[in-house]
Length: 635
Image 1 (cartoon, rainbow, N blue to C red):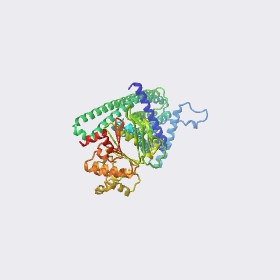
Image 2: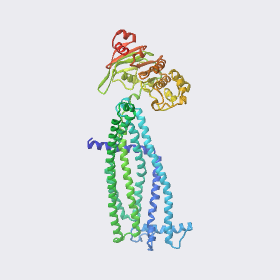
Image 3: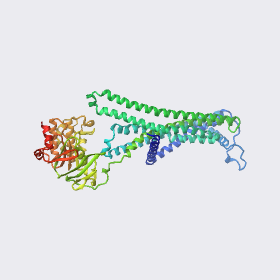
Image 4: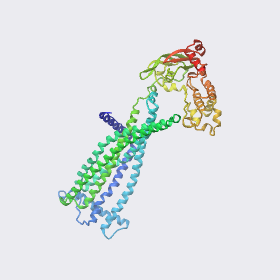
């Protein structure tokens, strides 16, 4: 990709991150408001002890010079010609000395030396600030991290919902491992980033402001040093941040490739072992992992350079500060020696604050890189078939296919298919592989819409019908049955949510699976396992048939429902299918022609066109393509 393309992508990813964070702040404004309030209190209780350096050093140095009253206590026009900062400083010392005497007297810990009372008061105030600061830190940490987890959880929910609303064709263009990586790895990167950033993006800027306030009060000359130090530290952070974002995107893409490689190993483990592909698949996984490591190393080197440059900027600023303090103490005499400590402590902590902000900025850039791939999916147009349509209460099952054309990309799969099916008829679709049988079935289920022509159900164009209403009157039984990793009861009950146990058992009886379920230790509560791993193929298929029976569809789609079964299981499943088809419009794809000999209509497809149509007897008598297929199977 060109530099211009990288820059445009980086900018778009950063804008997407800002938009998402802002929307999260608006949606959780009460939570964010509480976090900011506690962050302000944390800043107050963290920086307040630094102010104690002034009276502490004054007392340790034995400074008995008279204190200058504050400007608001001096008569108009009579204020001494001294620095305003010095007068505030002296007023604070005067106030704190009185406060110390009162505090140690209340505690009953007074000393004969009044300076020791001030030192003791400094310790007590530091402990109180520490206790209150610990409470505020607890709330800031808890709230900020919960906010980060909520943002990422909402993103995962949005991504899952979007996956469910994408057209079926989208999944044919994607690799499953990469999509899983975006939902797991990329969002995990974002969660870690948001947790760290939420801790410091709010707190550390407030801490820097607190340092500025302290310097403005006691050593206003040092403010200019701080104003120089922060840009010196922040500029490398900003410059390297874009590289971190770009390299994070590439690193996560490599992680997606590694996840896909591992997904191929696990899902195809039988094929891998059968063809002795262990070494080859492991080498592929090693290569993808090596790519991930190389790209991650580049990203970490960029982050390391940024932190090193930030530290150098701090050291330059600190050197300037030392020279400035030496000048104002030894030459200009504009500040007292006790003010030196007040200046050094805030400036030394500023580096830690900027360092944490640098790290937070980098992890946010990593989040922007992770979000880029997620946003690409979220911007994918949702399935247009889900939108709009007229409501339908009942479906009788009369289907008319009128001059339907459809293709994938530039290749036409169906070419002018026309067919009319009366309600309750069973239609078998047969033909060689690639003839268009599955594509026509997908169009009938409205996974796609025809590019030309139309499909009508009960006289209504399927594109004008509300999809949810139409799907509520259909059911499908596929060649590869799919069961969710939950109980058998739930897997059957998905056919009609809210069905009673009696209705579920009735459907299981009709599918010839009820008696088997009762032999299981937990009966209907027995887990089906991952993809039905606790059951045989025939048992899984009969459970999916029970699911379809429970749905009581008007239109039924059977896609090679018995082709993968042995003879015993095929007989049981076929009897269940016969019960399921009774009285319903059924479309059946079958390679074993013996299973569809009793179909009302048999449609022979070849290269996307209907070449023959009729009953089994009629097609045998015609002595055409269907008879040749049958003869090949029976030979």
